[in-house]
Image 1 (spheres, rainbow, N blue to C red):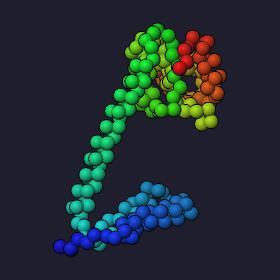
Image 2: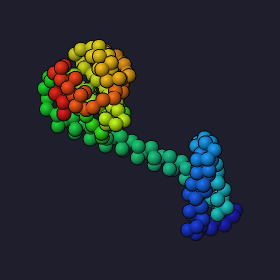
Image 3: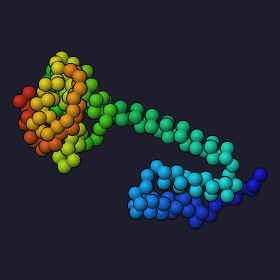
Image 4: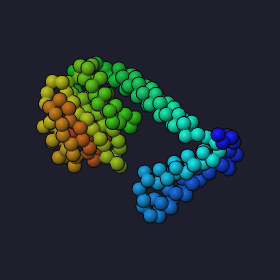
Length: 193
């Protein structure tokens, strides 16, 4: 068995420098697949580890440990985001009003989660928008009391949008000014937050 040696600062920085070089030339100049280039960098890092006396089993164990730790952190982050979304929804007063929420904090699944929490509080319709005027908005529109597809169809037509869904929930993307979107929703008696 090869004796383990501790790499110096330069050797520890070498994988980062190699990665910067390989990605810079491979992707930057030749437009090669980033995934393949990252595999090349990983292979170099494994060879460096073997050179310093690390065994394959130790490398595999370290990778498995990092994967497990990453999954745990993802779970914890998702749980904290769920709690944050719930707290945000709890700040919206309970009523039967249609409500519209613009956010730059909650995208993806959190938009649907926020909509569902708001509908659970008794609101008849909820629309959640994520994004900004420059890049456009992703939206989710839902109701437990009525079919929202026709409203979404008109909305998409008015704001050059795309999307669709089921009677109780529609999602898509639109472009437009926040104030114009709010004015359009007010004709359906939305209260915008």
